[in-house]
Image 1 (cartoon, rainbow, N blue to C red):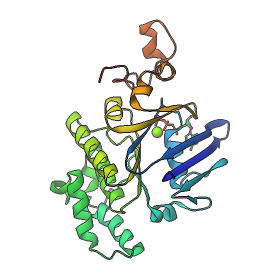
Image 2 (spheres, helix red, strand yellow):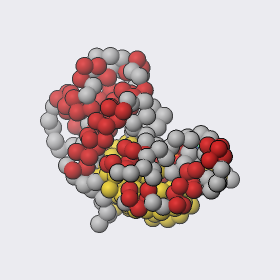
Image 3 (cartoon, helix red, strand yellow):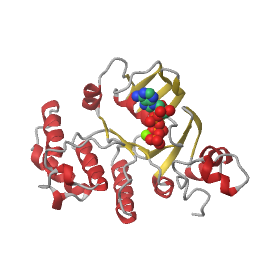
Length: 264
Ligand SMILES: Nc1ncnc2c1ncn2[C@@H]1O[C@H](COP(=O)(O)OP(=O)(O)OP(=O)(O)O)[C@@H](O)[C@H]1O
Ligand SMILES: [Mg+2]
């Protein structure tokens, strides 16, 4: 049984049909990718999974239990954690306090009464932010703030981790390290659902990729299958023959599919 099962998810914002019958499953023990052009519905799908956005149709189950009617804090308590595309750190707190806040909430929920401060420091070390622990969170550059959100999510000891573009703002080396960390977390038994525009990273660490386009699942497959899929290229690049027009067909993220079609 999948850890997370989304079935026929529907979301409408007035006239915008943001999710159109989306099916998606996430298994523990591997990184699952969710890719697609800007506006495809990736963040909306995350919001429905963590309970910030209600469904207009369909259903979501986590570990075999329906998430119907459960708010975000209940889902967090059951083991769903996330990071945000638009950063949501507690700016007036220090880096350590941001993670400690999550560690203390988790300690209150859990039978595990181990030290929250130790948990927080361990998570900061895991993401490589120990040296910045006493900095005010609002002074962090974007990349580090994303790592801070990751540490905060991990301090709840989640079973399912949802990451919305975690590598943006990171250097190539930092992005590689993040990728390695996500693989290690998955190998430890976590389910990881990754939204990411860095295709080289996605192709390297995901076992399965779900491609979303205009709110619907275009295809699901291994990185090799996705890389070879003409429909995926078309969704990103537009079905145009003139290479000069391709950049126009996908004006917001013209380099989003960098790595697709490349060897290796
Ligand atoms: N709260 C909202 N109210 C109205 N429309 C919304 C809202 N949130 C998202 N949308 C619309 O729903 C669609 C899907 O948006 P979403 O943010 O989920 O896409 P995305 O795949 O995350 O895009 P990106 O890659 O740019 O982050 C878009 O057309 C967007 O404008
Ligand atoms: Mg988004």
